[in-house]
Structures are given as C-alpha cells and as structure tokens.
Image 1 (tube, rainbow, N blue to C red):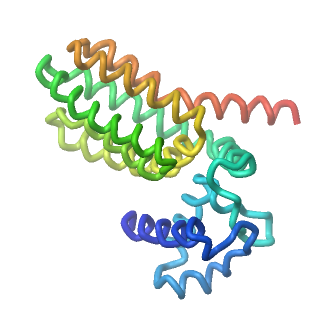
Image 2: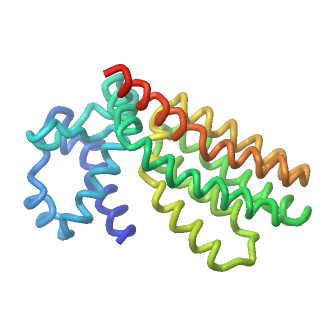
Length: 233
C-alpha cells in the first residue's frame, strides 16, 4: 500500500505546489477525492496525513481539510509543529525500538563494514543537503530513510533487516515533518554527519551511541513539550 500512498501524496501535493489547489481552498470530500484519484479512502487518509506532516494540508475540526500556505510560511511551520506534538508519543514509541535495533546493527559492523557504510551514508547525507538547499522536504526525508537503511545494511540477520525496514517506513510521516522545519532538519543533518565521521574512523561504538541518541532526539523533545503543555492545561 505504501507505493499507492506515496503516489497519492505526490499527486495532491503537486496540485497544491503548482497552484491548482490554492492556499485557503477546501479540499473535496474524502469520497469524491478517492473516487477521482482511484484509490481507497484508507490510502487517501494516509496520503492526507502525510501532507499534514508537511504543512501543506490542515484539518479544521469537523469542517474538513483545507490547503495550507505551505513552503516556509510561519503558518505552515506552526502546522508542522502541531502535527509533531499531536503524534509525539507514537513517534517516540517507534523510534525507541529503532534506536535499539540500529545501534545493535552498527555494533555488529567490522572495521571494513564501517568504512564502507560511512562512504554510502555520506552520499545519502549529501543528497539530503542538496534536497534541503532546493526546499524539497520530501526528498530530504527519503534521503533520511536511505541513510538509516545503510546503517542497518551490514547485518546478516534477515529478520532484523526486515523489521528495521518496516519501522523506517512507519516513520515516514515523522521524517516529512522533521525535514519541513529548518531547525530540526539542520539538527538532524548535523547528527548524521557525526555518525558518518565515527564510522569513517571505524569507531563503531561511538557511531552506535550517536545513532541511538539521534533516533530519540526529536521525538523525545516533542513528547516532553506535549506532556508539559498537557500538565499546564
């Protein structure tokens, strides 16, 4: 289903970015939009949730979904931040598992594995930097997925590889949100760079520790902030 979700997200997102759906427009109903695009309402909802994470679509209570300003607007950044707060707990639960598995995979690397992984992960990091330079949060998020696939690629445990791949896919919308916000995107790339440097030095223990800290950073911060806001309410 993920490929259908991706293509549906891209179709609606392109309409927004090309001005076919303008900021402030109300989206068609789920039923009409699903019929128009030829997808199930389950697929459509996943795509719309991805667009919310990107700050391109906003839900206004029971009034439906509307096109947000998008881009670097303050309104868009507020929407993305709100999405991260709303989903912080589920993101943290997935990232806690990913952090343990990814650190385990890195610690199983030989020195040569680490150097090879550093080269490949470095290429993924440069692709992310280029994507962000062009304002493409989706491509940067896809580069994030590739970066983390590389970190787990040397393990010989097929079950572990499959589990990590599934968790990376489950984190897709969170990555969209992270790379839609300049401050979180910059922090994520800096952490990626530190992991690459440790691997290049064949320091797998440091790379594993940095990877584990990196996986938990954003989700923990938003979960903590959301908890503080709930206590203050």
